[in-house]
Length: 110
Image 1: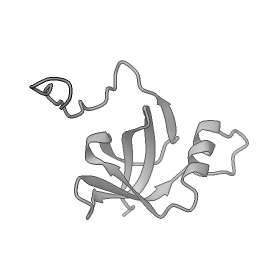
Image 2: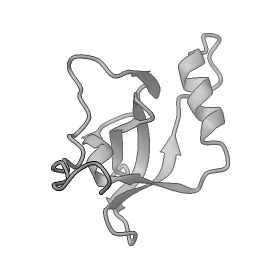
Image 3: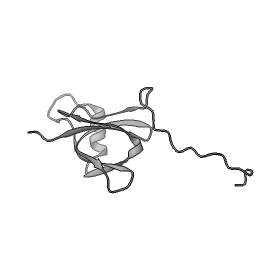
Image 4: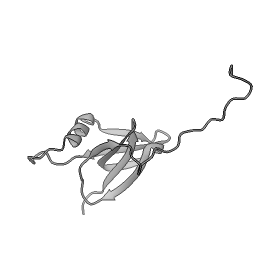
């Protein structure tokens, strides 16, 4: 029986990240999701995806990372790892609405 593998899609600094990991769970840090044991494609091939290489470099040496729950778009259990990637936020994916604060009453001095 093979180990579980997850595709985690989340928003970070205005971009959509899609990574593959063996472990994804609710963090001990309240309001965060922990992602561990990242998986990237094999380097043995002649064709190298520059986007995946950038992600590999960004997460090099990272044992686990924590994503705010509101930044997670989805988590899918998959059969095999695909290509990890980062792309611009488009029409199909929108950030979760942030907190809305009503205007203060009583003038502009607070």
